[in-house]
Amino acid sequence: MSAQALGETQSTKAGTRDRDTHRAIIHEPCTSSGTPGPAAKVTGMATSWYLYRLLPHRPDFNMTMSDDERAAMMRHVAYWRTQRETHQVLIFTPVADPVRSWGLAIVGVENEAELEELRAGDPALQAGIGEIDYLLLPGAIVASQS
Image (cartoon, rainbow, N blue to C red):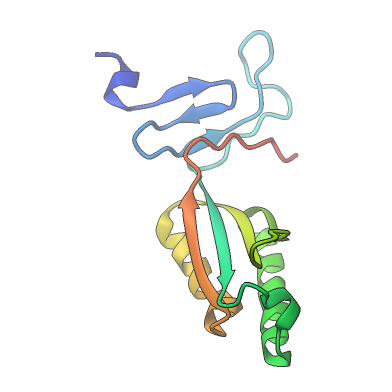
């Protein structure tokens, strides 16, 4: 059996992917000779990417926040700004969904326990704004961030 059939790793243009854990080691392209280019960079450990969702308890939450809820959401935004600088957070944003209010972040972590720690520290969860869940993005191809 090949290494791919055994689930070890799979090489792609985007990097190397562990087929069992779906974790990607993201790197920049190599030169034509196959050696890393001058700006090539490999993340230290494999990263798993997740869609992190905040689903407020009310569908019209963004239009009907109380002062306390607004203050909690300001703490939530400040928290994710800080996480963007200390973790791999590609984006965090409210979503313009005509059906209901919700927000998302795309977060890269070493393991699910790390993501659960981020979730536990989220002021929106602590204030009871709504449910927070996350979903693995097993095929994430992430652009290099130089």
